[in-house]
Each structure stands twice: as structure tokens, then as C-alpha cells.
Image 1 (cartoon, rainbow, N blue to C red):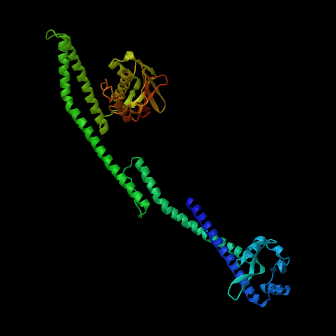
Image 2 (image 1 turned 90 degrees about the horizontal axis):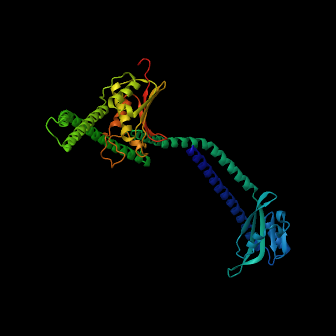
Image 3 (image 1 turned 180 degrees about the horizontal axis):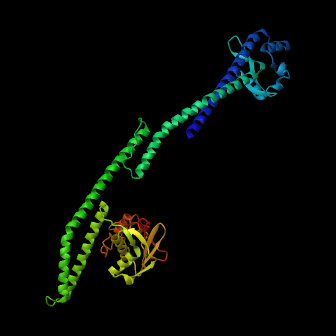
Length: 464
């Protein structure tokens, strides 16, 4: 629409300017012709009259000037027609210009009874034998009707308006076609940019022509190609890193299992005193070795689990599962029953019991480690989903940490380099929720404490 408006406005301005210039030229041509005619008439008649002029000579010169003429000499006048009333009918500005002594013809456009007239005034000049020109004191004025010129101008405006109305539809059509030719590449480029923003890094636009828009299209394509190459490289590096971590974890699994068994046997022997008296610091070192070895084994297991989830090879065995029973079983197996309150009604979901136990353990364990007991587990269900919220009695999660709580190995406080968890628990819980078509969200309760909410699709009748 903007193109059409600009086209219509431009055409209107062009027509108006053309008509204005043509009108000015037409009026000026008429004025020049009238002035030239008067000068010729006065030039032809002036030598035949005697000076100083008598009233008869003034009448003779007036007649020679044509109708609607006035001859003024000092305080004597000879006029007829429109100027029959004498110099009172001539504007003072025109008389002042004629009397100025320059000897030039002066004109002034006036309205008389609603009609346009052109008043022309000229002094009669005398040339002495030396060739010098001087004023004779005679002034000649004539009035010429411009109604004909006005009609010609109006006719010109009507013709121009008619021509504009005939041409305007074609101009609008051409404007629309031109707008489409310009906007179509812009639209394609906008679509490409939107696809790139949505993650489709293979999106490209075919450049057309060699104008600035084509150059911009080339630039966007080059940028997209560079971005695609960079992302591919980052993906490859990330895959290599994950593969390396998984391979290392697999290689560490067997020796760590052996080491764990050996350290526990050694610890038990020292604790029971079967190898003789043992100092307390030695016993504490053995206890620390057992704890750190178990922690390392748990980290390796979680890295392997993350690698399975990333690779899409995680084994999922879904069955009708009582989520309430899973929660109680998880708390009982880990000795958390005294620190956790469970409320709500029985909820059944279509899920892998083992993976659901893992999710509950990570959410509740996180609340006990980073919040404060008692941790509350609330179960509920609607027709569409089952909901389990886990809230703790701690200070909550800082606002700047909240968006990153599910990131792998993320530490909200960099100073805390040593924490009980591996930094993978919440990430594993979130990935397992996704495996079941659910979600986990994190927030802070209005009265304090962190709240993690697991939502799983409700089990359908066919599934149940």
C-alpha cells in the first residue's frame, strides 16, 4: 500500500507541477504578446503627433493604442472604455513604475468585476539628434482582457486531470508489480532468517540480481554457512567429549568395582581388629577411602547413564506403576523415611519403575542435601497427568541459579568445589522425565524452600 500511495502522490505532484508551469508559460506568452503589440502601436503613432501634445493629439495617440486605452500628460487625460474614468482606474504601483523614468513597459494583473485584466503602462520616449532618449512626459495605459487566457488555463487543467485519471490505474498496477518484485526477495530473506532463528541452519535464500538486496542475501547465506559449520564442529566436539567420558567410565567401572570390594574388606578388617591393634587415624583413613570410592563409583554410573540417555540407548520398560509405592519404596531403601513427609492419594502412571525410583531419589536427595528436612512429597493426579512435587525447608534456590539447576555439573556457588552430589542427579532426573513424556520444573515456594514438580502423562485405560 505504501508503494501505491507514493505512486499516486508522485503522479499528483507531477501533474500539478506540469500544469502550473504550463499555466505560467501561457500567461507570460499572452503578456509578452500584448506588450509587444502596444509598443508597436505607440512606436508607429508617436512620430505623427506633435509635441507638446494637444487634446486632439492625445486622442489620436489613444486611438492608436487601441480600445480601453488612456493617455496622460501632466494633469490632462484622454481615456475610453474601461479606462474612460481616467488615471483613477490605474493602480498607483503601476503609475509609479511608469513614471520611474526607466522608459520600460510595466504591467500589473488586476481583477475588475470578477474578471482578470492585464494593465500595461509605458512612457512615450523621445530621441534627440544625438541619439539620447528622454521622457516626453506622456504616459500610455491600456487594459487587456485575460478571460480568454484564464479559459485556456482551465482547459489545460481539465485536460491534465483527465489524462492523470486515465494514466493513474496503469501507474498503480506498475507500482504494485514493482513493489512485489522488491518485496518478494525481502519476504524470502525474512523467511530464511526466521528458519535460522528456529534452528534450521541449512536455510538459505537464492540471490537474484546484483543489487544491494542480492548482496545482503549473499551475506546472510555466508553467515548461515559459517554458523552451520561452527555448530557442526561444536556438535562433533561435544559428541567426542561424551564418547570419551562414556569410554573412560566403562573402562573405570570394572577396576572400581574391584577396588570398592577391596577397600571395604580392608575397612571391615580394620574395624573388627582382626589384624591387630589399629590407630584411629588409620581407621578413619580407611573409612574415608570407602566413602570416596563409593562416590567415585556412583559418579561413573551416572556418567554412563547420561551417555545412554544422550545416545538414545537407555532401556525403558514401562508398566502400570503405583507412583506412591515407588516413593515409599525409595525412601525406605535409602533410610529417608524419618526426614520426608508424603501426602496425597495413590497415583498410577505408565512408567519404568526403576527409572521412576531414580527420579524420586534424585529430587528428594537434592532437597535433603541442599535444603533442609523435612522434605515434603505431595502426590496428585488429574485426568491428563500425574503430579509429584518435592519441596524442602531450606532457603530456596537463588534467582540467578534457578535457570541452571538442571545443567550438568553446574555449581551455583563456584567456591563450593566439593559437594556430596555428582552434579548430574537433577540432569538425569530431567532426562528420565522426558523419556516418559513428562517434565520437571524448579521454583521457589512463596514461604521459602525449593519446589521441584514432576509431571507425567496419566496412564490410559488401554495402558492400565
